[in-house]
Length: 127
Image 1: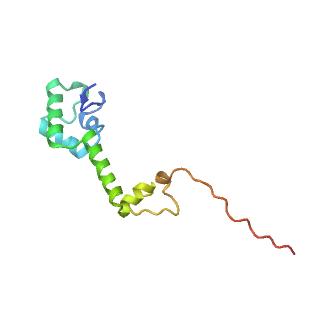
Image 2 (image 1 turned 120 degrees about the horizontal axis):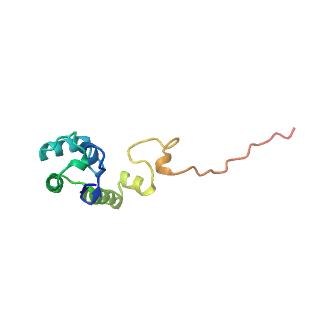
């Protein structure tokens, strides 16, 4: 199993698909990496030589922000928003949707499971 930037990428998939297992690498960047490294996109990850893996690792280090560095950068951006107290930062702090989605219904992913609140009892007519 080839290892890039501390992540084991799957052996039995094409290299373009395997590269997308890295945080911050999508299909377009994976194709671009293969083109720059001179690797055929249809080759399986297990068939890569040590030189190919080394070329991919150096390209990722030099040209792209991926894995731990990208996660750290995203976390710093969110912390900055929280500290300055802007609208987006407040939404992050409260655990609510940040990008304008509705919260009256849906938003269960951000809000978590329903917390049932007891409502008013219906007023019964005593006639």
